[in-house]
Image (tube, rainbow, N blue to C red; front, side):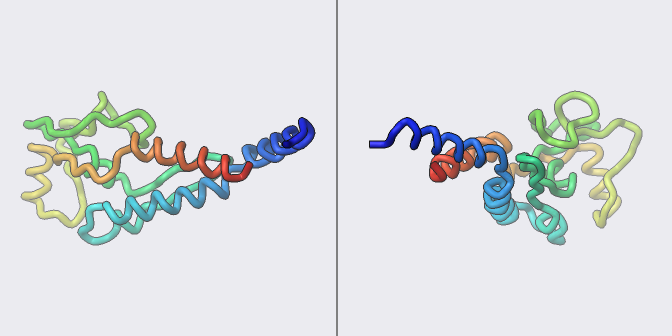
Amino acid sequence: MASVDDFASQLEDFGDSLSNLDEILLSIGGQVVSNMKANAPVDSGSLKNSIQAVVTQNTLQIEMLAYGLFQNYGVDGMQQRVADDVPFGIDPQPAAGKRYGFSGDFDMIGGDLSIAKRKSIYAFGLKPQRWFDLQQLTIYIETEVARRLVEEI
């Protein structure tokens, strides 16, 4: 049976592990990135190669090229609404409202797409290709951090 002093010592060590989660977050971030890369839509591979985990001061951020978000949530066209709402916590947030869309200033997307395809996306939007779910990622990260911290006790 553990004494009160043993328990207090364990709690002190636990507090130390809570003060620096960077190593745990980096490991979890690597798993999240691997999974996201496996599910990312691939054309040139630029999106897939851009996905990375950044850990600073006990914070985990997943970064990627912005068009990965546009593919995941969709983009409303000028003539048709097809996008899904973008949840809080996604950066960049839509400029106006809760969905990505065009401003009406005829600013089309760039890239290697033909002019006809870019005009089509501007008019009719880009349907979501749900390849990641922020809520599921959040739950996974929270659960995994808690599990690993409990293992340290």
